[in-house]
Figure 1: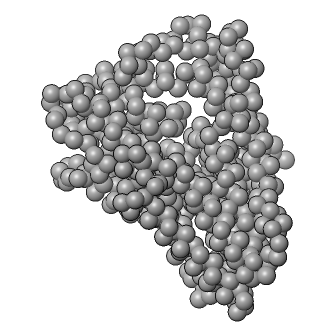
Figure 2 (figure 1 turned 90 degrees about the horizontal axis):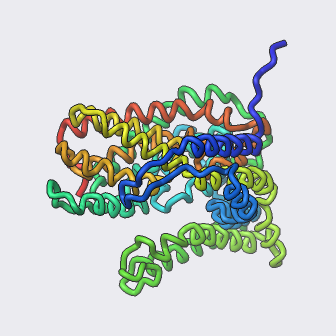
Figure 3 (figure 1 turned 180 degrees about the horizontal axis):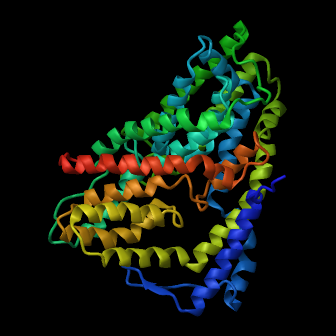
Length: 484
């Protein structure tokens, strides 16, 4: 009998990655690795985690590394709302109502992919809210729920820049690009939030088509038929009481959405920023809570209207419903939080990224080949530094002026960056939401780990990189405007 190489548990994997970061920080500190931040001129040096100061820092921050882990609070807040909606039967009723005419599997797959790609309009909410719902949707049409998790995950991660609408990322990247181009005499234009809109609008359909094809031809055949127990009879008709409860809860959800829209986009909107924009506004900062509260509100109303809930303690039970999943997530997230914090403290991500950027700038070739190399470089850097804004904050000040000297406009440079920044999101272990994705997968496959996720996702990343880059090349050669 052959002994198969088994990957460690996700928590163990992050522990081993932490040890690797600690050792690498020590080695690079010994050799005096240092770079210069092109934006500020600051000297950035690798910091050892094995030195006296590094050990003191780690011991002082073990707890705060975990409690300050950015996705932790977001996941808990989002899962409260989803938990009530699931426990009260609201999500099940919505699925049973939508499946009354036995929709095709292809339709469900396309809906999940499209929702995943455009979910970045509200930031990272797609990772938390859409993925567990996608697993239930796939299971409801007799597809493997892990396929739903993977499909939604790659749609959110690899399609992060593409959208039919203006996302929260657009104005942030545009502001950084404008700052990098501000002192250039070769370019006097203005980079706005819509500078890449035309290209990203059409890219939504390109990315959706690629993900759909791979899901149908590779992922679903690989996973096979799911033999687990379905949570409920998806095709059982709703009773009159359930139908009435669903109408009441959806009506309440509509009124709630209308209130949020008016409070955000009307002239007296209190959810807009001080300057009247949405950038860094209460709406953007609180959008995940607003979504979770809305879902939880509809779930609560459905629960009482359908007779499932009779007292407030039933709602509290619904709020605690996701705790079994979150128990696994907390363990994984603890070790992941230490790894991310150690990596940031060591400054290895910035050092390696700036060194790579300096190496790329030393290559002399024509503008077309340089853009292609820039996309590939961004995909590699994205494996260790996944924050788009953090990467672009220093990369823009290197590449925007350099490419402008070659006749490449800043909006084109920004567009190329966004392709490379999105393509490899699904395969990097340094993605903040990786612990949550692995916890979702372990609900249906107890042996799921990073290796099994990578086995499913690498085809998506490679195909999206190739086809999205090819589409970018065609757009570039045809000289079509990227946006407004």
